[in-house]
Length: 238
Image (tube, rainbow, N blue to C red; front, side, top):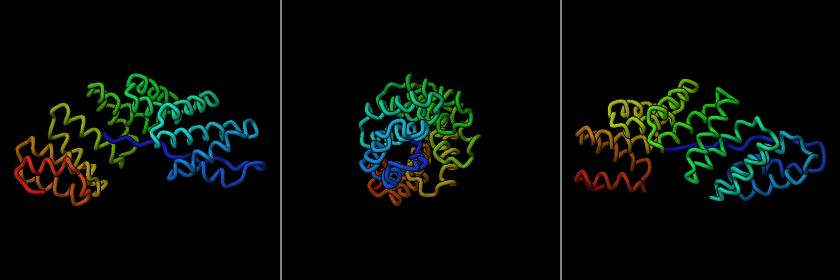
């Protein structure tokens, strides 16, 4: 299961008092430490910033903490974003992901459901709730949420991949392969989709196609140990 985060959101520049670099640092999402520092500078301005800016700064800092593995600090920041902006769907979505990371799947589902109530077109909320339902073994609900994410964004390769993984968990190999096909068509460098399709082909007894997919996985991701192990299990040297 692969799950994306809502990326850094852009704060509006304040007229005075906070250097432009702090906004730039808070808005970027590549360097977590830099983002934490920039967002903290914005947050420390308090009510001199708009509610929207403060909420986004907490959201972006929470994302940065999440990337560093500081899940509790991330949740605390998402809590603050929601406290400032109670209808902030993105904050519920990302807090749901953080709860999922902690293994608190029911709380994750509750947050994604709240995000959907606030924004019925929230693709990532459906996608992430589906991933949480899969963890609980509620496969039909997981598929329904993936269906909705795909309906909202038909080019969402990850949604096809995750739905294929759920079908595979259900033992429905042909629909799983069809979804991995679609994910690969949308993203030809999607190593995990080739790998999982290879597993599905192996389950069908189609050794040649399984081997081809595991080799393709390693072509894209040479360090993929699962693909190496599966090739060895099929009697092939990686």
